[in-house]
Length: 274
Image 1 (cartoon, rainbow, N blue to C red):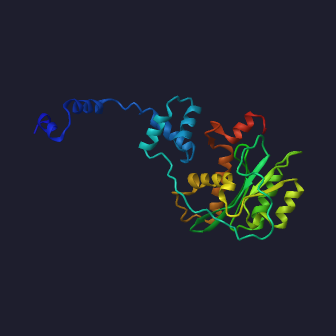
Image 2 (cartoon, rainbow, N blue to C red):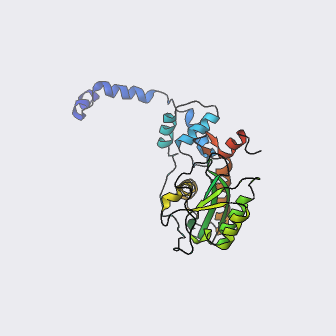
Image 3 (spheres, one colour):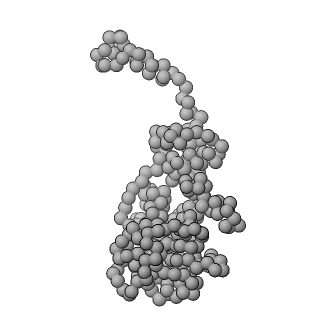
């Protein structure tokens, strides 16, 4: 049966049929761009969505629309796959009187080391469980310091806080905001805060939005590093090294769409770091 007889039977106009035939013979206008998009995706360690890939291309001198990049990433399986999961919680109930919530969900900071937030999160792999304890600067989202271990204990939290305080300059005395778990109410944590002039602030009991800045940070390593990856055969030491490498990459290299560059690069351009 000829096409002329078949087209009315399937409800396709003759003009539409001939248009599609001609379109199939046209060269692919994105053939030159796809390798560059793939390269930009690899530069982001396959963690970037189309917006950051678009910024990576812009940094490479490639000027194309973000929608075009979105179409290519979606059509060629380059978009990251996200997955939500229940966050680890170490809340054990009220142990001692907690400090007031001085932040009141306003996580804006006008300068570095003005407001820090912290929390703990858990990563479960076949080899066991690992815990990440970072402190985040609300000025621009910089991970000031972090520790990673196999137990959510006092040493993990206190070591992270001591490392963060070692970066402070004279006169810098941040507010340190956390939830109400026991890690941030033990004597050594309080001692470190007093020694460096930090002001403690705590969320309301069982109210995760009160520490939304820390909660939001944890979503990124889960999406970009952890979910949709198999860690079968990875030792716990190996996983900790991988997670630490991710945190270094996040601090120094990861493009933040708000800035169009990494957090550390922006600080360098502002003269905040050498």
